[in-house]
Amino acid sequence: MLQIYNTLTRRKDPFKPRHKKRVDIFVCGPTIYDYMHIGHAKTYVQFDVIVKYLRYKGYRAYYLQNVTDIDDKIIKRAQEKNIDPAKLAREFEGYYHDDEKKLGITSVTKYARATDYIKDIIKQTQALLKKGYAYKISDGYYYDITKFKDYGKLSGRTALGAEDAVSRIDESVAKKNKGDFCLWKFSKPDEPSWDTKIGRGRPGWHIEDTAITEKHFGPQYDIHGGARDLIFPHHEAEIAQMQAISDKSPMARFWIHTGFLTVDGKKMSKSLKNFITVDDALKNYDYKTLRFFYLSSHYHSPIDFTDESIKSAQHGLERLNDFIQYTKIHKKDNKELTQKTKQQFITAMDDDFDTVKAIAALFDFINICYKKNIGGKSAYKLLKKINTIFDIFTFKKPRIPQNITILVEQREKLREQKKWSEADQIRKKIQTLGFTVEDTDKGPIVKKLGIKLL
Ligand SMILES: [Zn+2]
Image (cartoon, rainbow, N blue to C red; front, side, top):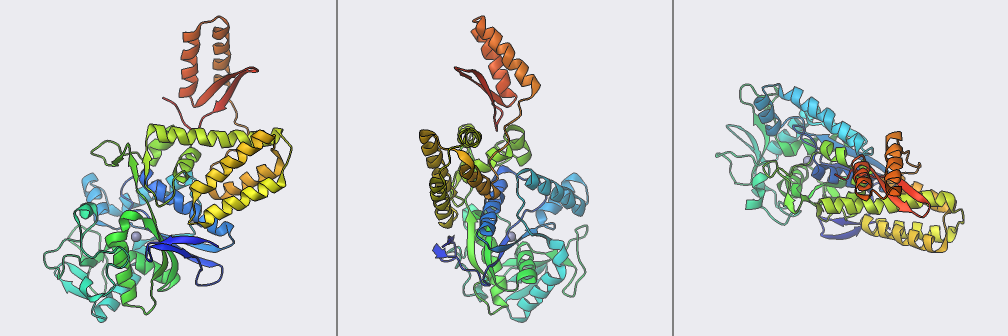
């Protein structure tokens, strides 16, 4: 039975969807004003694996993701670049989908742009006004957090702390309470706006999510996901909006949050120059290496991206890929052992999608196989099946390009002539081209790396 750690209850709860096998899942999508970085990618890859595992278990998962295409950040960036905010948003939305494709993220059923739900946002704002949760001041409509008694239940807090300085907070001197957030913002001249019954303006950030989920799922659904830094105030605000106007509680029955990614132990930031975009990362690492790196930690744990940690992921993945080739040569099959491993994999994934334990089971499996000369079809098939969820393995024998073969031959000649340092120079060159050469009794073996060693 699948157990999921639920931020709302602060424990692992047995997973049961509202409607038999149907799972409605919503994950906070990007604000499209900049490129996706490897921290965002961690969250989206981990949810990709979670949704693919749900489908593997036979659930019909409807994976909904919003795309924030109207926001202060977008407007600010567009002004800096002197272009139209809508144009900027469309451009980065395109890059976002390109990056997802490159990362093997293929599980999202529906992308919902905030600007396509203006009517629904107005409807919710009106409902909140009618019920007395919202009020109007000079710059827009705000939510009065003191009116909602459960405010703070998800995060265990109601006030902002110093660590929230980077979050999007709606600042207005006229607000009733410091923590009140904006539902509908009256636009300044030159800002994008929509003419509506409650005035010309644009949506606040939190309300787009509830407008989108209510439209597709109704006031209650199965899973809400996102990165940990969204718990407060973003997800707290969503709950306050939806549960104030509906008698269904909780809005989302399971809340799944992913841990942070740091680079060399530090939070990624442009000022620290340790900001790595997905595009940058994919210049140096194969997407499968990147996915394997993310899955090597539990989704709710933090993960530190360093030269060493990514190389270690690459080595681990190489061992698994080597085994795939081994299964083709060593045909001795052991179905019982494969079945046992499959069960261990499922047990690990059923325990709050524990990819760390699942991968450990695979390493145990290949160690036994090597020891007993076991390979064969059932092992190959198992890895193929797992790959429909993880998307990390390479099944085809990697093709070695001709320029690499030539370098390897040159190196062999130099080695025969005992010109070690020159031979070593060529080995390094081969590595910068994304391959590695191993010297064995039977001659050199060339392997493709998921990473370019610089
Ligand atoms: Zn969101």
